[in-house]
Amino acid sequence: MSHKNRENFEQMTERMNSITLSTGNVNKKYILRDIIFATDRVEADLFASDAEPNTIFKNVCQKLKQMAFEYEADAVINCHFEEKFVDQGDHKYIEIFAYGTVVQFTQTTIG
Image 1 (cartoon, helix red, strand yellow):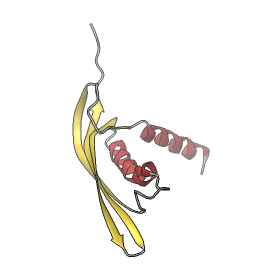
Image 2 (tube, one colour; image 1 turned 90 degrees about the vertical axis):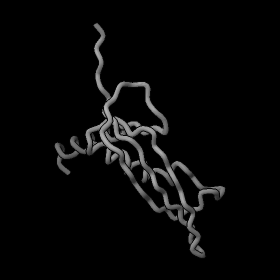
Image 3 (tube, one colour; image 1 turned 45 degrees about the vertical axis):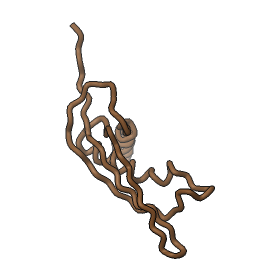
C-alpha cells in the first residue's frame, strides 16, 4: 500500500470511528438523512460464560457506521437491535437485525 493510500485509509478509518451510534437521541442540532438497516449472523452462544456481547454485536455496529459514512453523516441515533437465537444441533447462532436514523449534525452560531 502506497504512503498516500495508507494516509487515505487511516483518515477513512478515523472518520468511521468518529461516527456516533446511540440507542437514544442526542443533545445536538441535526438534520435527518435516512433510516438504515443492517443484519448479521454470528455463531455464538450469547449467554455462555465466555461470551463477549460487545464482540458479538461489533460487526453489525460496524455495518451501521459504514452506511452512515457513505451518507457523510455524523451519527446513527435511536438504534434498535433485535436478536434471534437459532440452535442447529451443535451450532448456536445469533441473528441480529439492527436499524437506526442517520443524522448530520448542524453547526449553530450565537449572535
